[in-house]
Image 1 (cartoon, rainbow, N blue to C red):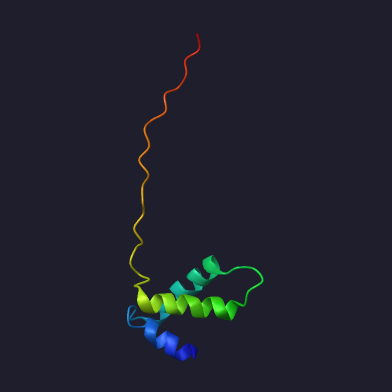
Image 2: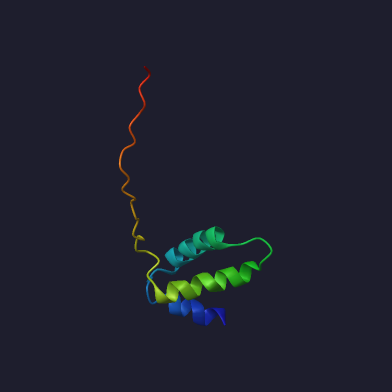
Length: 73
């Protein structure tokens, strides 16, 4: 049931309003066309149960060597 998923997700987020905001944003980003919105919402709540949605995800910065510009002769 979805209520079980909500209570599980509340283990990481103490504010229900914040949980709703985070879940709606995540559902919009993860939703695929031709799939049920309810299933996407349930998937988001399952993910929130296992991880903290309020923490920032680590961003990997790719370090590439600078490209030299060609000079005209």
